[in-house]
Length: 350
Image (tube, rainbow, N blue to C red; front, top):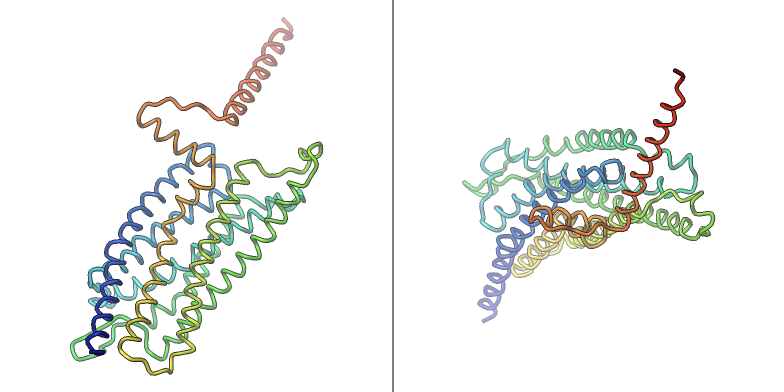
C-alpha cells in the first residue's frame, strides 16, 4: 500500500514539473519576450535616450531576451517536453551551458552598475554627479563583460557528454567538479545580493537627503528629475526581485550541500528534484518581469505606453503637465532666439 502511495506521489511530482515547464513557463517566456522588446522600443524614444540609467536598462533587457531564448527555452524543452538537445552534440552541450552561465552573471552585474550610477547621480556633491556618464557606462559594461567571458571559460573546458548507463549519455560536469560549480554559483549570488542591498541603502539615503532640502534651496542641490526618481524606483524593484529569487536558490544550495551525504528514498529524491526545479522555475521567471516593473512603478513609462497604443489606434491622448511645461519652455526658447535674430538684423550697419 505504501509502495503504491509513494509511486502515486512520485508520478504527481514528475507531472507537476512537466506542467510547470510545459505550460506556465511558456507563458512567461512569451510575455517576457514581448515585454522586453516593447520596453526597449519605448526606451529608444528621444525623451529617454539621454538618461544613463536607461542605457543600463536597455543592455539588461537585451541580455534578458538572450537568456529567455537560450536558457529558459532549454528548460522548456528539457523539463516540459523531455527533449534534451544538449545530450546529442558536444558542441551544443558546451555552448548551451556556457551561454547559460554567462547570461546568469551578466544581467545582475549590469543592475549593480546601474545601482552605482544611481548612487552617483543622487549624490549632493556636484563633482560626484559628473561621474554618471555614458562613457563610464560603456567602459564598465565592456570591462564586466570581458571579465565574465574569461571567468566562465572553465565551463567550456569541464562540461562534456558522459555515459551514465549503457547507451545513456548526459551533458554534465564531472562529479568531482560539481561541488565547485555549486559553491561558486552560490558565492557569486551572495556577492550580487549583498552588493545590491548595500547600494540600494546608500542610494535611498541620498534620495532622502535630496528630499529633505528646503524648497527654497532645492534648485541649488537637486540633481534628479521626476523621471530619475521613477527610474531609481524601477531599479529598486528589479533589485528586490533578483534578490528574492536568488536567495531561494542560495537557500536550496546550502540545504543541498548540508544533506549531500544523507541517504534518500526514491520519494525523497523526487521531492528534492521537484523543489530544485521549482526554485529554478521561479528564478527563470524573474527574467520576464522587467516590463511589468516599469509599467507598475514608472508613470512616465505608462504614459509612453499609452501614447504608443493610442497612436496605433489613432486616438488623441491628452499631454501630461510635464510635456506641456517642456513644450512651453521650447516655444519660449525659440521665441527668444527669434527675437535675438531680429534685433541683431535691425542693428546691422548699412
